[in-house]
Length: 320
Image (cartoon, helix red, strand yellow):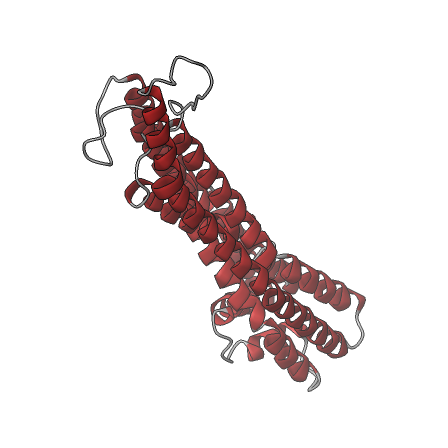
């Protein structure tokens, strides 16, 4: 009877691993990135057609085709590329962080169950009855696999594949080696739980300290936008007025006084490009400083890019 149960468990394990292999494909994040790239490509094509005058699609009414409408579609394409991907990846990172947050509690419960003489698989099954937030679902999956006869090393490896973070990899590696070596696994689990909690505390302290720098990045970006507005609304129009006055005066042909103003409208394009570069660069820097992930930075970059583009197109007056 035991042999039958063992063979049945092996068949279940084989079928589950095979099904898992077949289900492997493009992740949700990759699909979102590909969809965003497709939308971005369409918007870029529309921008090119606007730039060469083949079509006339205006984001700002009454402007006509040209460089500014073309740049609008380029910006919208960039938002379509990095925005959804950054949001989805940030949501995934938050989910993983929530799972890791309760990992020390689970390890301590497994260690306590192991001190009562239970084996590691039995201790995991008993501890799976607790509540660990988002980690509960993953623990119940691992406990179900163990109850079906899956080896504990395999169940831990599958858990590591579902939550592929450096912290989980380190914890699974230590537990697997301690279980294979024998001895008191409960003491090892207690030390791992303590070290994991210390790592999490260090990460939270780093985030709190970096939050100040992220705030400074946002403030400097908005100060940059206000500076552009002041230049476009006050300083540069005065230059255009002065240049036109000199051009129409008697001093225009003498060469004694001259003021070139015909390139002033080009400055709007330069300002717009500067805003795009600052938004993307500052946003990525903010995400990397906050939690060391570029994906988090893409979310900040999307917010800055949308705000900066809308401010430049609908608040800053056109030059010229």
